[in-house]
Length: 297
Image 1: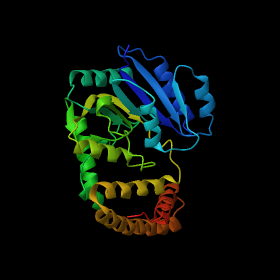
Image 2: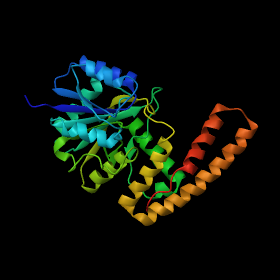
Image 3: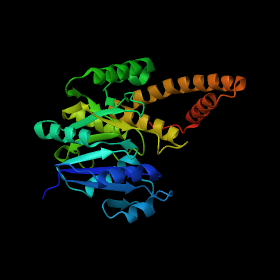
Image 4: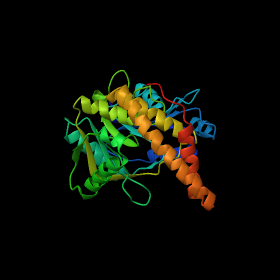
């Protein structure tokens, strides 16, 4: 029988979360057919041994860390199915949310992408809606305003509503809507590959919806390291260059440099006056951001 949904995740040293996700799918009883594929980015935490021991999942092993989008692309290419569901490993899923998303897509063939309400473990809404806005990259206050507006809309929505796009922690896309030659742009290693995808799909006019009565938990931050700061800014300027041009990419870079230096100096001063771990963590973060290699424009 034709497969309905191909669930795909990329793992990198997230053994415990990969186990939980695998256990969830191993007992999932739903009216649609599905497969679960894990693309492992050369983990060294025991994930490879675990994945090899589980015969109920489709396991793809990479010989190197491909990054998030590239790994997901390998999973998409190796699977079939009417829909592709991209999920991080550090999510807590539930049957009810999956059913609602599947039924929504089945009942609305014009929709290309949908996503559930995504929250943190404490129930707070995550910023999971993509909004097409150049100003938000120049002005943090405007970015925060857009994020607040999106979260408020999700919290008060009584029915599915259309958005510019959704971010990559969890979403369902119709396979016929997957861009060619690959779902994610492989120029991105980690961070902003989901923004690039959302922006590309919006430019194509592909309808994207949030289904607010379907809700999942995304813990977040389980596959990051100190190198993640560099990857974040590298991805940001690459995204800006691709969608707004090198002028705006370089201009936002200069705005960011001023902001990062100001924050680094401020937290360095605070670190001299307090032993707070939070302050020292902030200082370290801005130090890494300031030391990040200059991007190519």
